[in-house]
Image (cartoon, rainbow, N blue to C red; front, side):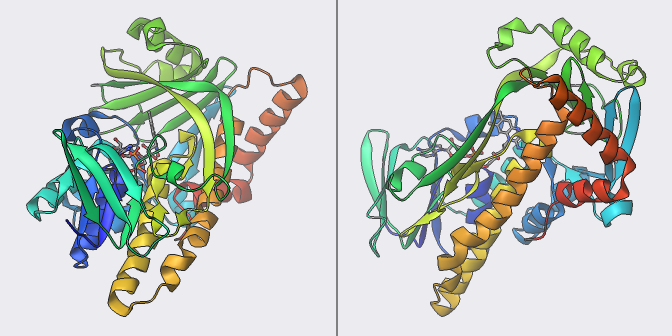
Length: 389
Ligand SMILES: Cc1cc2nc3c(=O)[nH]c(=O)nc-3n(C[C@H](O)[C@H](O)[C@H](O)COP(=O)(O)OP(=O)(O)OC[C@H]3O[C@@H](n4cnc5c(N)ncnc54)[C@H](O)[C@@H]3O)c2cc1C
């Protein structure tokens, strides 16, 4: 078998790249370790930047997003008994869209199936081979049979635990990491959001976030210790703790209900450099992770895909390698800006168990300054809606 671009991973990065390349007439095959149902069941990101919205439109999968997605012109910050709105529209003239990662994945899977593009689900032991040569290939097993696909390029869109990143020789790959001393316990619940916009709450008991997936479905989070297990958190405990962390006027609007999903995600910042070795390119979580506070994970995957799509299109149109050669440097510039913002949002809004009283006072000063300074609010808004590609 032969294809122009071999893609590992059918998460949002792999599916979006595959769809954009297909529309450009560039053949591609996606190899995914899990089943399609498993991929669709993962509840993850829900907030997308305008750049991601535009890219989904260019991929021809924006119809349902525009019909069902919720446009948000701002967010609420709550702390010390006060509420402050950061008005993106007024500050930077842009907005964000609430539309679940599961829905984006579903739209992309349907478009791929309709176009007859090949995705191999439950592909076992996927391996990129000969990535330093001009003729790399992908091998895998399916139903006990071994296969090999010859490719011009291999794109590793296989997430943080994938195989691609480890294919880059250790002496070439440099990694940067910060592990935060807490996680996010999240529940999904069929209850309307308590507020039309997201509420980011800082309290002495820890951080909380009220977000949503639709007008009838809420996604709610509380910061929790790293060693907590989902079983430690009954629904009743979750609702009581959330109420204690919110402003009383917000807590009064909570309507507790049974969770339809509950999970704990550790928080991590991580970057691997370079994002390209030979004919292997990394995109999305395969190359970088951000804590979810700034809602940047999925959006960074989209901007990587944009740079790759542009570079591969240029290559297949003109034979030029310039865009591909510059990919790692170009993508990493935006990655580090999103890393900085996600780290900063995490630092100002969470309760750090080891923080000294001096650091706690600094955090208070930072939050107070943020909501009183138009310059500081503009900086938050500019990053939150997404920096330009
Ligand atoms: C629990 C959780 C909650 C999150 N919440 C948010 C949020 O609220 N907001 C936000 O912006 N971001 C959030 N994120 C981050 C966001 O979901 C990711 O940034 C986004 O999914 C990245 O897309 P991706 O395609 O790069 O990687 P993934 O979505 O991880 O997709 C990678 C795919 O590759 C497949 N794969 C892995 N290894 C192999 C292999 N060896 N062979 C073949 N296939 C393989 C995987 O099965 C998977 O389908 C969250 C992430 C997690 C884990």
